[in-house]
Length: 134
Image 1 (cartoon, rainbow, N blue to C red):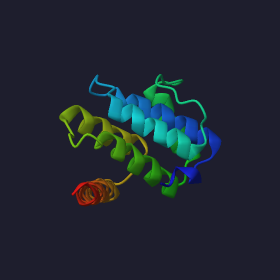
Image 2 (cartoon, helix red, strand yellow):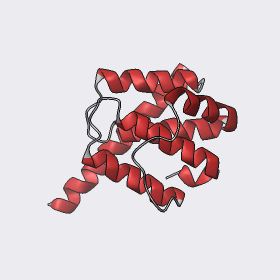
Image 3 (cartoon, helix red, strand yellow):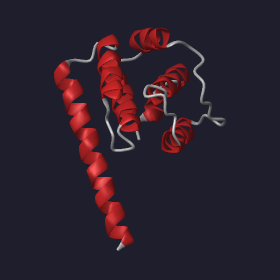
């Protein structure tokens, strides 16, 4: 939704972060691939990839150096949406998100707000799906 605000370098770094996120619980499932495909379409990346070009620490470091505070919030928001896409937020995923937030120096209050917003958005999407299906 907000990924078009990132520059080309940030988009590639964000894609790497998503790939690392999807591999967190060792289950790079179909739903995560579909979300990554959607993110790529939104960012204008023609060919999605499912292997990172850079390591996790390098990705986080470069994102921190190249992103404004607003862009960091976008990165965290969209990564959280990926992590919560299957409605399961296990310990490994929570640990990953806390690590990303710490490495990108996002405050605890902002982090908690982002997670709450993503959960609310997910609930709204579920309600819309149920409404359409009845």
